[in-house]
Amino acid sequence: MHAFIAHHLPHDGLSFPVIETGSGNPLVLLHGGGSRAAHFMPLMRHLSSQYRVIAYDQRGFGANMVPPGTPIDHPLWARDLLGMLDALGIERAPVLGWSLGCSVAINAAARSPERIDGLVLVGAPDPARPVDVAALRRRQSEYGALDSEELGRRARSDLAGQLAPDFADDTAILDALVADRMAASPAMQARVIDAYATRPDLLAAARLVRVPALLVTGEHDRISPPSSGAAMARALGAPDPEIVAGAGHYIAAEKPEALAHIVAQLLPSTKARP
Image (cartoon, rainbow, N blue to C red; front, side):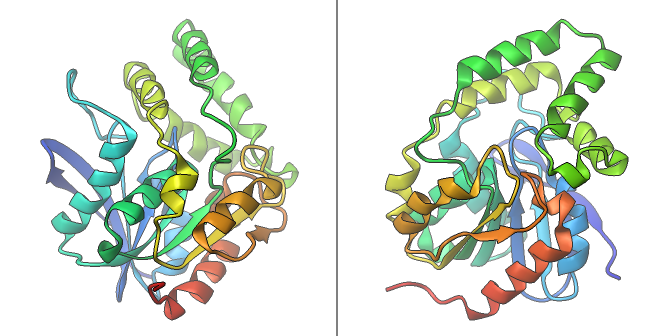
């Protein structure tokens, strides 16, 4: 079993918390909204025998504190990925993105295909459904009126509804997901919600991607259901999405071993598309 190494890397005037483990060729993991690098630790354990697995808190999430006046937006999240590759001394690597991380990975691959070896896109956003920033702002406003104890209960209830039925009462998973969401301050969460609205046209970006890609979705994913992945797969020139039985939106927490198996099947054969 490989140990986890936690450290910070400077980039663009910020300090990016990084977790890594394993050895071999690098694989970078990008977390979703309301989460952080630590979300991937169960998955990283399963991948560490094959890869040097790296995850970091994206700007505005977890312990990556962004000072007032410093911007947060989708283009910066994509540029941060390339900057982190530089900071890690990695010329080129495959990237696994989950949820929001899929958008970041697609935009980075469209911008700098020479840096990205392949994409595994887990729970990718439905490109036909715009980000409902108004609804997210309303939820954040409601959260802001709650004390810390009630806030934790509300977050727990919201997250349970996004898990597969077999995991909706899993205390360990829910505890970890609530900790991920609560790691950033309410003020930082509000700034990130505004940043969601800067998401560019994902299908247009996907059509520019020239590296192999695979989409993965959970059988019970209510946020990114299996039926929503067809358009993205066509834009990427990718096969139909792989469906993980018994999983919801949080596949890396619910079914880490199954997801690791899918990753291992794709990455050894990755070759850039002409």
